[in-house]
Length: 330
Image (cartoon, one colour):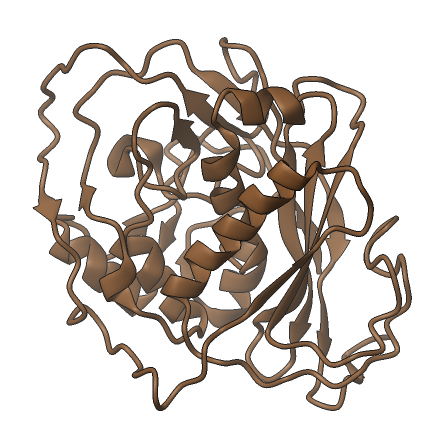
């Protein structure tokens, strides 16, 4: 199964049908809207939370195969991984050494053969000149466990043309957190085999009139209801083209939530119980009490967005059993 995912930086203007995630400058005024606003302090009662004594801690092993990210940039990505480890707390089965060779996912990924045990998720991060300063980067899983469909190896790529500027503006921490969410499996390629979405068209298909895709995982739906959502499912992005469409929460409904299409500059982008619920739906043991407080809807206008347009990155999503052997390969 191919996964297409990479984010890009684009100046304000129409998306022209291309996929996008946007970084939006913080507005200076507050304009009330008709969208209901509900302020929620997350509680551990939305869905079960494992105890620290019964479930070992989840580990994200972030590696930088070259010196394409500076030490400060590497530290930002590692901090984002630590934040996700507060959310995802259940250990995954260790994967035994595999026969996966270097470059078997994509050029430079993996950087070496995966002939060593993996616990729980290995993420390799590089910065590359992507040939267009508007391109920011992106993330996606490449290899997953056959037992539960959760990734054990994922890729994150940043664009060396604008990575320093992203750091200087203060946008790198929230971008890294968002990208690692995709690396953990916040994507239709992981959702769809588990029956967690409805209404999606193929990634290579144009957006049809009235397009209305939804996420139907019960824990995310329960969180959405707790937040004041009035639908039996959670709306997924239905515009902005491939990549942004389908693979994020719908911006018009979920506002500033971390995994919407737009990342807002200068204001919080909460990692809310909604995203925590989606992670539980795909199979992770989670701690909802670690989620950020969140207001449903957008109470402030969008002002001069800097759009992050996605570049198509085709990765083979392959499955491996507990012994490290491929499952279902030709």
